Length: 228
Image 1 (tube, helix red, strand yellow):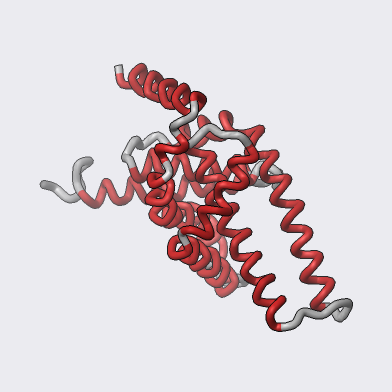
Image 2: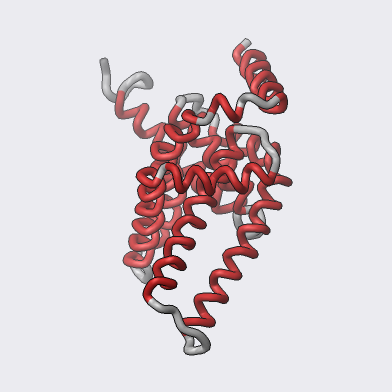
């Protein structure tokens, strides 16, 4: 088999790499208004699984399909997470600028809460990209998942920290711009390897609702129609 043919390994790798980067670019552009970060993250995860992991090769269609379907709910969740994040930031500023004090125990509790908060955000929008559920469940289930699957949650934290370190290291260098474009898609792809096994474990619970059954039927109908 010719490595450079359309069926060759090199072509398939470059195709997947381009789709990964393109999904990251779509995420950056659609996240510019800030409050749309949640909808963009939901869409990016959905497109990454469909187009890169499952080889459907339609990243733009998959991205905007999920972006449109989950826009309102994901935006509401984003506002909630931004408010909570602002509260954490204010607490950190208040105590670390001499207006309060953290003993060692309280510091570790605060650090753990921040880590759970970051993992919960990643799980929440990934969960929303796959299953139809209430905003309350979309916000609370990820907290339980984070605590019950610490191994995967720690992996997500490693990806967060690694991405931040790489971007910080490359700041003020010629590598910063290309890494800024590459990093969102790469992190999203790596996240899928940590999150998908967890989501599949709870798939029977999520698909037990009528709404999810209807959503699954609609997606199957769309895919059947497109394949004709």
